[in-house]
Length: 186
Image (cartoon, rainbow, N blue to C red; front, side, top):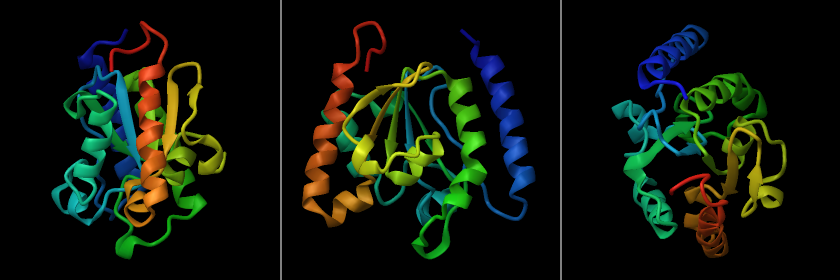
């Protein structure tokens, strides 16, 4: 297991590479405990997160916290990151090319953090970690990806406008409790 000091140094290098690639954009980096057993991947920072430069305090912070709490996951023990490292103005639809442009950074970030469970919120987050399955085919399934288990569900923005998607997301997140014993104490 890598020490937190080593993880900080590796993340610093990844952050430097992201800044270099996306010059002129305000980058919002992942945050949370470097020894987190759970990583949460959203699609992109919203306008509030972009303004503050911090994930987890935007419009969907409370629904996300409630969702994780229902599965017994303490949000303070979760590493929170995004598939896209910058805000997409006017909530524009993120293109596959944009997601792919950040995908290697996200994968490296997860490799450094070494979570046991990665929860993706929405299709862009799912593509960001490298799965090209439609969200409806992946959501609610606990997938073993070798280095970690993946649990995909809908983004809270979809759950906000679709009561059925909200119920499915609530059901999906409970799958975190099905992790094999010893994998994660979520």
